[in-house]
Image 1 (cartoon, rainbow, N blue to C red):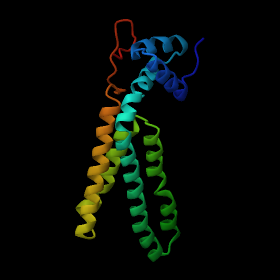
Image 2 (spheres, one colour; image 1 turned 90 degrees about the vertical axis):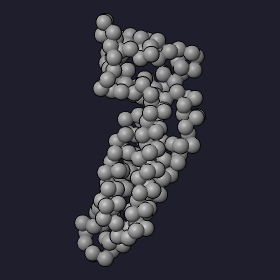
Image 3 (cartoon, rainbow, N blue to C red; image 1 turned 135 degrees about the horizontal axis):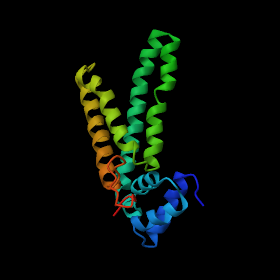
Image 4 (cartoon, one colour; image 1 turned 135 degrees about the vertical axis):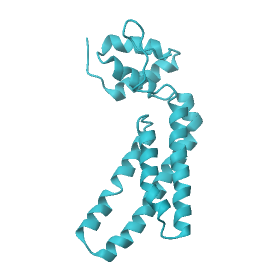
Length: 182
């Protein structure tokens, strides 16, 4: 019976099967008998960190999460002062909207979503470039640079360490059309 791919169910299945010693290729073969979307299955398997990797890099993941949260709070504090001085509805609307994207990143990083790590790092670096190149003060530039180095560095470090085989665009196939995961 072919079912629709449910990411959470497949991730739990992958974790369970890895615990009993099955390889990712064996898990993939078993899942392709149940589900039709081979590429999604391969992406989910390679995007699921092993328990040992999660334990090994857990502290770094929490440092990333807390640094993102502190960064959001600091940016909000700066934005609140500007919004209150301007007295317009648009600024207050942005004040509510601005934290939604970083909190989404925090939620997905907490869940170990492989695809969000590089996106978070790139977006954080991109949004911080203006603050670094045109700082309000020297301290402002230094603070932003420290956050960029910590958040950018940790997102890419964790991405490579937690998901070494995760590469949705470069998955290799064998002659029968199945993905090679090991």
